[in-house]
Length: 228
Image (cartoon, rainbow, N blue to C red; front, side):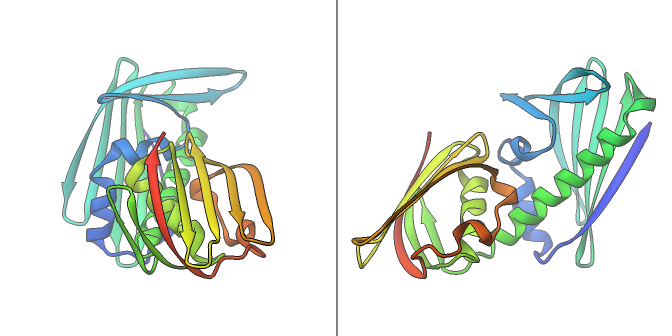
C-alpha cells in the first residue's frame, strides 16, 4: 500500500468539518483528479507519464472519533482517504492499494494536499459572517473583497459545482456570479454609474480577495442562488 499525508491549519471545529464531509457528493467534485460523479460512483483521472489512467469507484463514508474515512472500491484497487482532526490541524491521508501502486507516490501527495486545501477553504467559508441562505434565497451582510470568496465557497458547499447567484443592495447595486464545474466563470457588478464584468476561470476553492478589490461592494445584499 502506498500512503501520503498532508496537514493544514483548520480554524473550524469538528462538528463543522463533520457536516461538510457528511455529503461527499458536494465535496468530491473539488478534489484533485476528479472527473465524474454518477450516483454513488465516482471517477478520477490520474495523470502518469504521457498517459491518463481513469479509475472508477463505488464510495462510502464512515465516521469515528474526530475522524472521517472515505473509501473508494474499484476494479483496479482501493483508495482510502482519512480526515483526522488533531487540535487545530487537519491531517488528510490518501492510501492506494492496487494497480500501479509503486508509481502513485506523487499523485497521492497531490491528492492529499489538494483535498486538505479544499476542505480547509470550505470550513473557513462556513464562518462567513452575516450569511443567511435558505432554499436559494437569503441575505448577506457586508459583502467585501475579503468575505466575497468565503460566500461563494459556502454556496459551493450547499449547491455544488454549478450555480448562479444574483444579489441586489438597497442602493440598487447588482451583483452576479456564475460558477460552472466548480470554477468562477463570470463576475458582474453594476451600479448606476459603472459596470464591471470579469470573465475568469478560477476554481472556487482558490478564490482570494484580489479579484474583488476595487469593486463597489461593502453592502448588504438580498440574494437568490440556484443550481444550473
